[in-house]
Length: 206
Image (cartoon, rainbow, N blue to C red; front, side, top):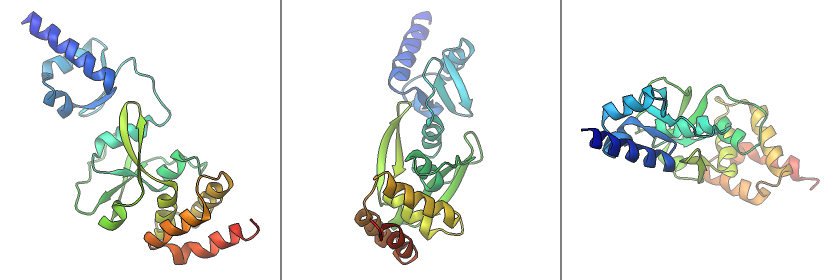
């Protein structure tokens, strides 16, 4: 019995070396017994972030760690809107909730930590402009700069227009996207008609 516990502790440690944040079902799927998980929490090896979500105790906390935790909470979701804008450094706003886009067909999680704001997008919008970033050992899908701008301009009832214009200006000033790539994404995202006058105004002297 003791040998089995030792083996499971070693296996758990090896898993946490590669993925500092893991969901309970992922640990169980890897063969880690619930008793081993509880023991790891009690002895300080694991930190229980929220129900069913655990983090290695000695892992470094990154500024964007909440995005990684949200990605674990909503496996089919993509970091979107103001949260994606903040990740790309295009707004000074720090949203209180993590904006996560999901397909209307997918399951929305119950309220938990981190606080999540779900945005349902049509399937064709969900398939556009997804980037993958490694944060705290987690593969986090985040919409690209161009895709995020298209979404924010299209969803004016969700995000204030001033935030959209600020993000557009910052993307151009920081050269994180070209006018052409922004326009292309806006056309694909059905927001070109709304965005066009702002993009033309911001690039007219450029």
